[in-house]
Structure formats: C-alpha cells, structure tokens
Amino acid sequence: MSFIKIIGMGKAVPSIRVRNQDLEKTVETSDAWIRSRTGIKARHFCGKGESALSLAAAAAENALRSSAVIPAQVGLVITACVNPDCFVPSMACLVEEKLGICHGAAAFDINAACSGFIYSLQIAQALMENGSACDQAHPYALLIGTEQLSRMLNFKDRSTCVLFGDGAAAALVRLDDEAVFFSHTAARGDAGKLFAQTIGPNDMNAHYPAARTDPAASWLKMDGPGVFRFAVTALEEEIRLLEEKSGVGAGDIDYIVCHQANARIIEHVRKRRGLPKEKFFMNLQEYGNTSGASIPLALCEMMEKGMLQSGRRIFCIGFGAGLTWAGAYLTF
Ligand code: UT7
Image 1 (cartoon, rainbow, N blue to C red):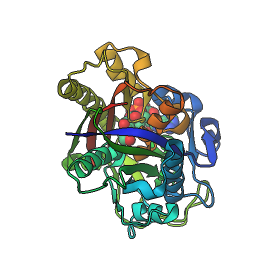
Image 2: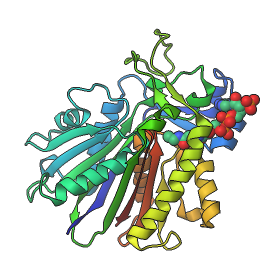
Image 3: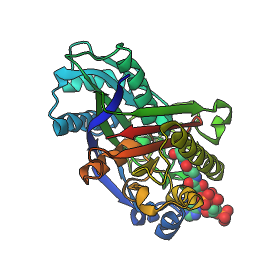
C-alpha cells in the first residue's frame, strides 16, 4: 500500500491586515481581552478583488511553483471551504480554469469546516491509492483550504467577529512508497447548533469594512464556551487515537499541528498531556481562526521556516462547525 506525502505548500494572505487595536475602534472589545482569551493579535480580510476563489488559486499556484510541478501534472483538485464564491461550478473547477488544469483532472469541493483539510487528505489518500484519481502522467493532487469568513461575520457580535480571518493555503501531495499516513474523520450533526450559520441570504459582495445592507444576512453564530468544551475533548481524543494508530507517542512526534482557533484550547491540552510548547506550532496570533485554511496555513509556514524536513512525523488535528473533528498522521 502507498501513502500520500505533502511535497509542497503555498499560501495566499489577503491584503487587509486588521489588528486588535483596529477592531477596538468599531467593536466593543479590547486588545487585552482578545489576546488574553484567544492569543490572537491580528487577522487578514479580503479587500476589493480578493475572495476565497482568488486566494485559493494564488495558494495553489504558489504550491506548484514551490515544488516545480506544472499544472499538466495535476490529477486531482479538492477545495475545502465553508463559504465559497459560488456553489456551481465548484471552486475546485474554477481553480482548474484559473491555473490551466484542463486535461480532465477530477475536481470538487468539500465542506467539513475547520476539519476540511484533514477530510481532503483522507479523500485524496483513498482516491489516489485505489487508482480512481491521478495516474503516472498526473501523479499530483492539490488540496486547498480557503476561506473568506469576513463575509459571514456580524461586526455587532463581539463574541465572534474578533476571532475569524480570511486566508488560503494549498498542499501538493502524491503517493510515496516511503510515506506513512493515517487519518480519522468524524462528525456529530446533532450538536451542530453550537456553531452555525443560519440559512438565509448572504451578502456575497460585502468586503470589510463595507456596511452590510441586509439585516437578515446569515451571520456566523457560535456558542463559544460550548465549542471550547467540545474542542478540548476532541483534541485530546484525536491525539490519543493518532498515537494508537501510528504507534508514535505524542512525546516522540515532531509536531502537533492543531486547528488555529484559540491558544487556550491548545495550551489546555498541552498542559494536561505534559508536552513541551515547541511541539505545538501556532500562527493564530497573525491570522485568527481561518477555518478550513488554518491547518494548511500552519503547515505552509512551518515548511517555509524549514521545520518539515525529510523524516519529520507530525499529527494534524482539526475541530469545528458541524460539529466535525479529524486527525491525521503524516510523514515528510
Ligand atoms: O473554529 C472552530 C472551533 N472554534 C473554537 O474552538 C472556539 C471555541 N471557543 C472559544 O475559543 C472561546 O469560548 C471564546 C474565545 C469564543 C470566548 O472565550 P470565553 O473565555 O469562553 O468567553 P465567554 O464567551 O465565556 O465570555 C466571557 C465574557 C463575557 O462577559 P460577561 O458575561 O462575563 O460579563 C462576554 O460578554 O467576555 C465577554 N466577551 C468579550 N469582551 C470583550 C465576549 N467577547 C468579547 C470581546 N471583547 N470580543
């Protein structure tokens, strides 16, 4: 059996950087509250001409460039996103159009919220290993996490609007005989109301800090403390599961890359397990919670910093709306 391996990453960061101090001017909040309760210092929002799609295409292009792979070698594109520019055609098809991937590579979107990237790793592993997607001429898959959450934020709800940001990152993966991979995905739809967007009109053209025109727009809503309790449990259970399935203890794994929602969630679990801080990469201080983009954005920055050299073994863990949660053991 062959397993997937990430061979390159690319990211796209939107142009508007919003610090906590900037939010203080319009939202009843403070830099001190946001930093102490979440660890977030800034986030990036899409400006004019930017969207989840433009970010996805830019991140995918950067992933290809960083790996010296050309679009003609790609056999599969999966985009994980909660708030796509449009539902039909899929974002993955639109990325193919933008990148000139025009030889019949499979393309589709998934929505598993903050666990989306790990779901897409699992799907890619299955499709590539059984020969349903990719072949010798097109051995690569592009797995993209992209979000424009700023379109879903209610800037009158301080309990959510300070937490989220926009962004995208893409992983280029292929089967590798030396690689080892394991993944687990899960959901509990019956707990979905803890974190939801009500079904309704969405102001598709809104750009921060544009005023919303539709008071009934479908804002993102979250029961923060309820999701916090779920997140720490999911994180701890996924670490335990990945240890069992991979045979590698958390103490021996090189890095644990968690969904970047809140530094306190990660700290809580880190302390309970008695693990060193250096094992947990965090970049939420700069991006906030970017949902499906958060784990690949962290992996991309780790790769840029030279932290993912050959031989590294990592756990990736996501948790979020749905409720969904997921874990993956990856080797580099
Ligand atoms: O991406 C999917 C996964 N998402 C998550 O994992 C998020 C999980 N939840 C969390 O990270 C945290 O629950 C939050 C960061 C959302 C909230 O932190 P908390 O410590 O659970 O705060 P809280 O909701 O219990 O609120 C505490 C207080 C309240 O005031 P009172 O009632 O004690 O007077 C809130 O009104 O903090 C107040 N508050 C704020 N104050 C200033 C809530 N938001 C803000 C704010 N600025 N932005």
